[in-house]
Image (cartoon, rainbow, N blue to C red; front, side, top):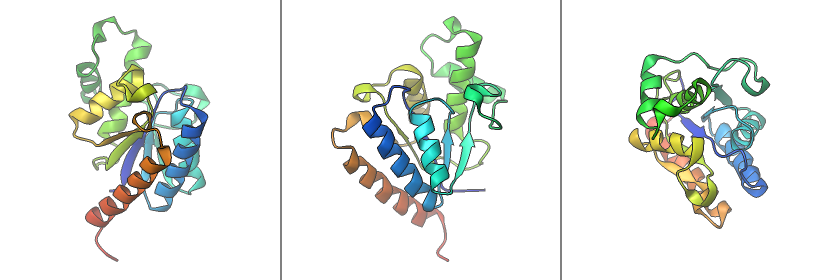
Length: 181
């Protein structure tokens, strides 16, 4: 069971320079021993996943349904608790289709990190202009309700500065939760 877990997610239309930075960040976090929780979508999720794999890290893939975006494996059966949290943080749950509800439940489960039995250290994402919008906005709302720090590349004009800050925070978190060898 890893105590070093973070979530990486974001909009499918994340800009290429941010995707590159996400891959770099995920690679470095993997080498520090962090497990990535991500949702299997194109764009930001895929950038985080590829970076973590390149860094030889562990990836927990949270999918809304089996074979989402042709991913094999992954987690896609969720409990009522995760469904309830997803509903609580969606502004119009009653109007959501079954597919949308599964996507939002996947978002909640990724943040709740129940399969790892450890809380997230932090979450990293990108949304346009740093706004809490779309599916990523739903994930941000769940994270904030769970008191998870959210770093949003959309809030920053110099993305490398945020990456350095996150890596520094990740190192301090690691020192706090893992006993010295």
